[in-house]
Length: 124
Image 1 (cartoon, rainbow, N blue to C red):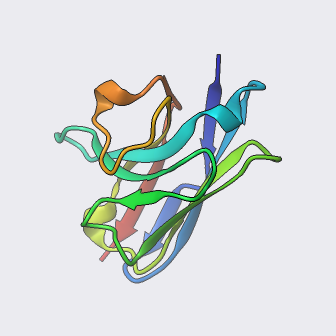
Image 2: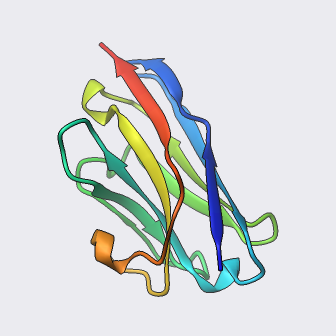
């Protein structure tokens, strides 16, 4: 069992930066690939980024590639999403996710555990 709690969301101007954190409980954190999804109002939840348990492999949605960076600290049981050059279209609730296998683009059906989400609002 893994419980995920996100933090770090907020309001930022276009071009600004935010760093999201996801704290995981459970001794098996390091066995899971971790990642982030987001969901804007009226839209489906979409994949943003993923990182393997070993941190060797990382994957990003095309829309965030070059602007967002995912990382994890298996000692602190935490995964991070550094978001730079934010755009208004990045506005969404961001969800932390854990899955048994990392993939270049997860679907929601690949995910074993979800956090409750943190809101990111980017003003123009």
